[in-house]
Image 1 (tube, rainbow, N blue to C red):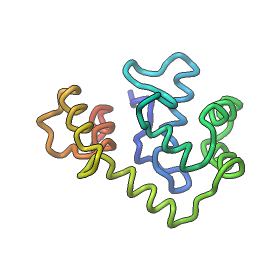
Image 2: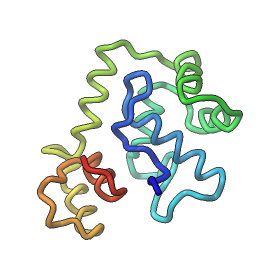
Image 3: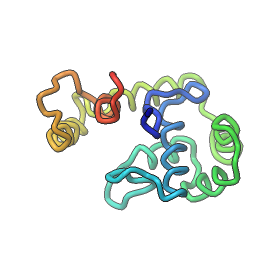
Image 4: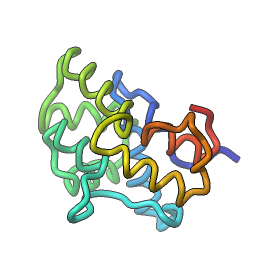
Length: 142
């Protein structure tokens, strides 16, 4: 069985992490979000969910409400563009580069190392970013 949350690398209109956040919101609404996963804004902790909403300039609760009304990922993203901000190609390129490399030689590096150890993957030198770690934990090769 395939893991119920898509890879953070999955693209929706060229944007990383969006599909993953959508999957987590849907699973949370169904009380089926896997143990250990969070959804939304976590006080005192920058999450990818939080960063995505800031990037698109939409409120997480409003996004959740719209998503639960139904529609394809692309429709939900178009709603985000209409409600908040539609990034141009360069902004998307910078966004994707930042997120795909988060945890590699930056302020998130210690967190990646800590979470690798907690996941029993401390021996894996190939896991250098949060995206690498998510994919490894969920049975996808990075």
